[in-house]
Length: 188
Picture 1 (cartoon, rainbow, N blue to C red):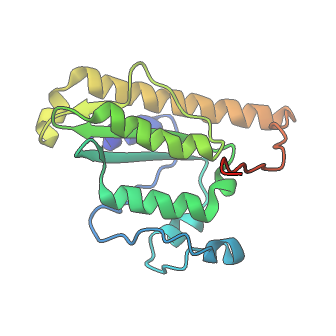
Picture 2 (tube, rainbow, N blue to C red):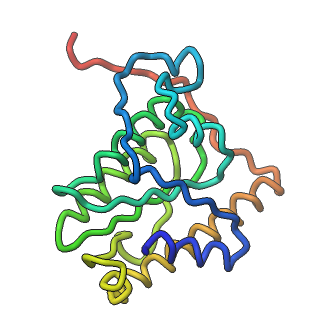
């Protein structure tokens, strides 16, 4: 319900969207096998992660219900594989997390999802409050007037940021140059 509200605003502002559902089927977790480093694809060929890696996009809005104070297992497994397989590809694209919960755990889940964007050097799209809705059913979520307004604000902000990025590109404003990655292990 929350993602549909964001999508409606984006489409009303001329932004093409595509919904990609991962929670309606089992999702294998990442085993950090390194296959993706050599092949730019995930070794698990389940038409989920590799499909999104092959899909061009300017922004990624990820939504999850709250299960035990965290994103669902399917979303977590999907994002672990997606970002392990290609976080460098997402640099400069926009990211936004949307969380739906019955009562509690939303802020922890929101924080969990945003960390994927931040580690991939993706600007995170703001709203007027944390991007969460409350309710135990779609009808209850629709009654969360502040939450639904937050979703619409998120959609408007994302559409604006996409236009700003396009204007910057048209004006030949180059994105920041990324330094070569330095990895530090704290055990010496």
